[in-house]
Length: 347
Image 1 (cartoon, rainbow, N blue to C red):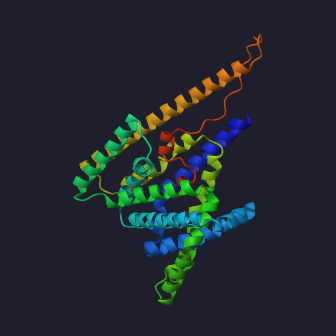
Image 2: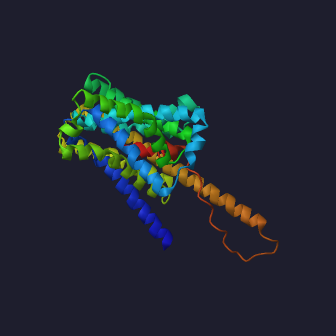
Image 3: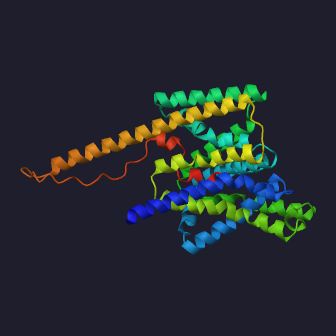
């Protein structure tokens, strides 16, 4: 019963985290007339405060000294902080300038970009279905480029920046709260300096917009850290493959909001491009689930064979072997984007 309750709590936390990330386009317009860069700077500054309080409450500070003694890790975190800042800033700008649907496409194609980067940068080998999925994704970008008259730059920059961020996070291998604290610490001084500079020029909206507007800007820290904490609760309670499927909730919600709430246009060529992306993701998901099931079955067979060999001669009690430990996710499951740390930066 306890295990069932834990898994149910994990699923609810996962739905809540990705649901909030999917609904966040409703929040950024509330911060107008603040520009995207000012909103981004506030998000960086206030996020460090919120995460710092969380780490203080959890007494998780020992990692700081270890991190400071590893220059290579610091360099990777700096790169991660830069690319996620680009991702965040462009996403905020996109939402506040009527490009919610195109922004959602970036997170739909992110798993495909992640796979492509794995092949090109890490020398990973793909299964045939994965090749078909990637090829279909490329075709979707071509269809959208023809329809737009230019490549969907917003989607591509969002997808590649997030995929690069995921690659850096994989190499750094830190917990979600710790890594967010480190990344926001890297950009804290430039962000705070920019806000002070705006204030000195009389262009800051933090105070000039009134107490309510200032409170909304300060709440960007909670908007960033809240879903992250929920995601962390889900990550330790549900299988990674489940998280990999839940991640599609965010761009689905963003896509629906773009059409229904923000009334963005969906001409036939855009539907065709999105349709190809969804076909690619369906193939990728099917292949990931099939491979994950085969991996579990092989692990079970190996465990049963080992149990039979270890059983004393003449022991025909027929007792069932204990269930195998959870097997690690297959490469195609990871391709769905369920590296827990990498998923903590969905806008």
